[in-house]
Image 1 (cartoon, helix red, strand yellow):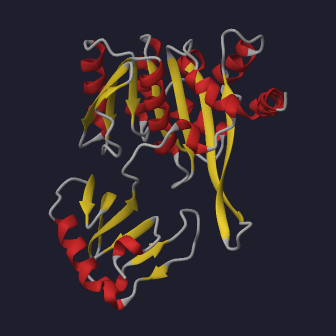
Image 2 (image 1 turned 90 degrees about the horizontal axis):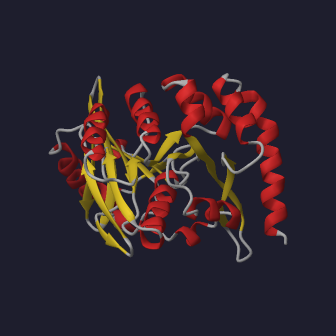
Length: 310
C-alpha cells in the first residue's frame, strides 16, 4: 500500500517511521500505526519536509497535496501534515443549506466580514474558497488573498472575476498585504486564517474600508467565534463589520450501504442591514454579550428552515 492509498486526514511525520501516526477522521482520537511497507515512503516524505525552512508550507508528494506545519520538540522536528484536496469544490457540492448558500452568493453582500469557523478538518477552508470561486464566477470583481500557506490554486480568471494569491511566511505580513491590496482595486480580501490579534484587526479594518473580507477561524460554535474575534480585535469594529458567521462540523452516521459516512452540520448567523433584528444583534456583539446570541441563532434557524420547506 502506498501513502496515497491510505484514507488519512492528518499525519505526524518524524525521522523514525515507526513513530509516525495517522488519523483517518479529523475529530477522531484514534491514531493509526502505519504498516512497515510504508516506512521507506515515510522516510522520503520526512526528507522532503525537512528541506523546508519555514514553519508552515504546502508540499506535493507522490500524488498527494499536503499542508504541513513544522514543530520543534525536545527530540527534534515533527511535521504535522494534513491532506488537502487539489480542486476547489463547488459551493453547491458542500451540502450547505440552500438558504445559507444563497446568503453567500448575495450580490448585495459587497462589504463586511464573513467567517467560517469550526474544529480542525471541518472543511472551513474548503467552504471559504468555494464561496470565493462562486462569487467570482457569478458576480465578478478582483479578489486578493493573504494565505499562510496557499492551499487551493485560485489564481486566475474565473467567470466574471479574477483572483491573485499571496503566500506569506508569517501572519504578521497580513497587514502589509492589506495595505498593498487597498491600492489594487480589490473587491474581496481573503485571509486564510485568523490566528492572532494582528489578523483580526486587519480583517475588521479591511471590512470597514468597503471590502468584503472572508476568513476562517478555529472555534467550535458561532458564539465562540464571535467571542474570539471580539477578544482578538475590537468589539465596536466587529459589531460594525460582521456580516456572516457559519459554524461547521462533520458528524459520522451509519450509511445506507453499510459502514459510515460524514455529514456536514452548519449553523449560520447572518447580520443583514435589511433585517429588522440587525441592530439588536449588533448591539449584543458591541457589548460583548455573546451568550444572548443564542436566541437570535435559534430564531434564524427556524426562519431558514421555514424558507426551505416552502
